[in-house]
Length: 239
Image 1 (cartoon, rainbow, N blue to C red):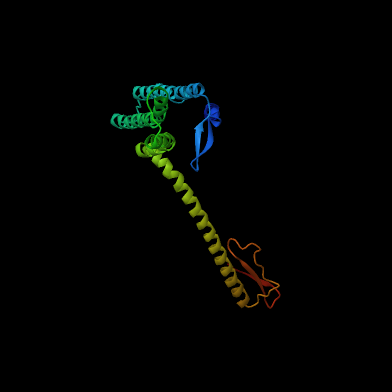
Image 2 (cartoon, rainbow, N blue to C red):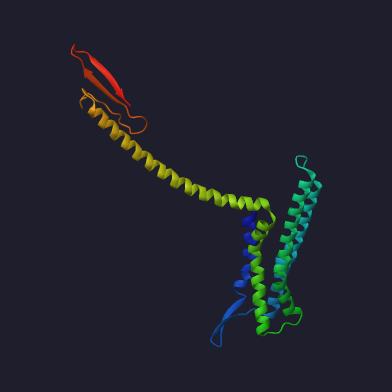
């Protein structure tokens, strides 16, 4: 529910930008240029800076400070104090790195927008490249967090490896199971053929008196009857 709520807010705040720009042909190039009035664009960019940067940074700062404070105030009696402090340092370092990366990745993008409205930002090739790079850096924040988790958190690395190892083991187990089943069927068929040849070689065992199991699984048992001179029968089993 929280993820759906966040995505909904993202669509709401990003929706106006669908009409913010318009395509134009300039020297055989297609460029996007703002079509809103200057006052509307200024209000929109300031609101974006407040709701997309200032408020998220404040929320991250407050929640992470509370998390770190709770982490260091809690005591785990089941672990050694040195190991507990070492684990807390790792978690604290990871939280700080994630928060700082968010601030640094999005700061150039918003600083350029603020410089356009309240400072000096000429339109030339260098500033155009700088603006593109600021966009790329801000979008890169969405993929650096897993890298930070992998570098700092040992449990994240173990869980990540466990997922792929389980998948690889599952595929390998399926292949082994199929191969074993094929070999088992071939072995049983060979054994049943051998039993049939033994039964046929025994004296007094005729096809109408011999019985073989219908299922090929388990032990194959051949039951035969041999008639004696006095009319009685001798029963023998070949397994």
